[in-house]
Length: 74
Image 1 (cartoon, rainbow, N blue to C red):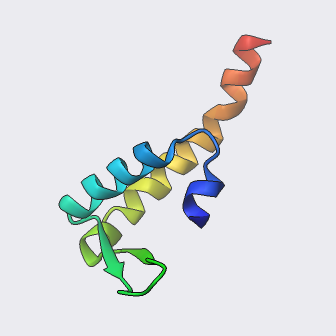
Image 2 (image 1 turned 90 degrees about the vertical axis):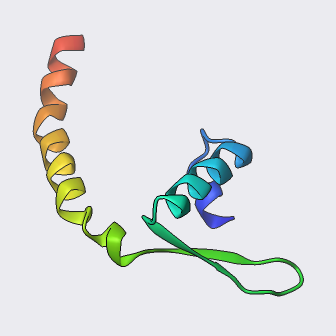
């Protein structure tokens, strides 16, 4: 549950729903350890890695425009 704890605004149910959607879309892979207590890990898939350049560009755009948003609300 480290991922869940790192996003305090999200409920466990909503996180699970989003993870299931990402698995269904092939963006991430789900790995069930078949242990007791249950342990599941997720990793980015090869297909998901194709999104890395796009996400990096969005991040850069957001960083560049963050100060603009702060100026307009001040």
